[in-house]
Length: 493
Image (tube, one colour):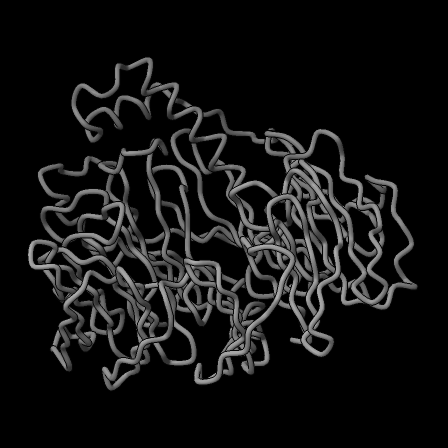
């Protein structure tokens, strides 16, 4: 499906008309005061302006990596210090970034081919960087705009929507100006090399999402909606985009959030209707054609859930009560709910129309841990359970801390609460003990599944399945941090 979408990009970018398909829906007790969305907005293809300036100037001292055998891991080995690890020789090679650059989260910054990276130099400049040559391919200058921003006008509108008494006029204006900076810094890859989704100021009171084609030097505005682009999520097939716009991006503030569905090939945009009595809603893709809506998100799970069906344009209620986890399992919804007073966990499979297909009650309080190969792993108070699609349960082990599957779907590393470490076959039937140099905080498999990297407090090791031995790679204070490894496999060929 991705190939089909990519092949249509040139046709999509020849003309784009954005139209509104749905009226505003009530947001609990808060009524939106946005200006009406234009019925039709024509956005002709334009040449990318100076904020996208190609250049061949190197921005760091590039190390010759042609002789490296790989696989190659680009990894942050100390705070804002990066190296390339050649797994064939177990050697590290410097990878210098500009001193002013914000440390990139490599998992989202790396291009689909693994050869280019998005690098935020400061609040005003973003680079597209060639990992092979060390050259800057494109510069995004976020200060270039022929439109002035009017935070006073935006604050006057926002204060009618934001929670009463939470902001003064001055604090609202300051929050809006901060959100404007954050909005314009959004830049992500889209489907393939050379296509990026960026945000630019659209008028005096809003920012808009753009599709930039770096190969043709053209860009396309995807929407012309009120508010600032806060976030977006591309559908699994790349055709639709779930877009979030707001005035302020501060934690706990949700009253000004609006969610839109952008259909790129059909060139339409619509405001998604929200259920009544929402609070801190959470929206996410369930399938290519359905969006899940948690009515009231909570630290664990939420309360109330609906499904928006794109083809039928219907919002179907699924749950009104609380749940601790909800996800797709095959073509069904898998839902975990708890009765804490009774010490029980209720599991159910439901259709996307809300029909109950299967239910099961466990006499223990259990939480969802992960989903591997069509099986659900639950962590309960004293054990972990395997649940298949027929609701047949088997005990896996003590509660699980880590369960990491190999890329070739042949093996799984299991680390339990009591720090037992075993290697499982894919069916989770056979357990083979594994001896490591300490309890791993994280597992990072090699691309060929011949072994895995693991991080302990302060150190990084590699374990080879064939030799059943560990090898020390590096010691760094950053490996004692609570965050996962900031690392990606790269392609420098």
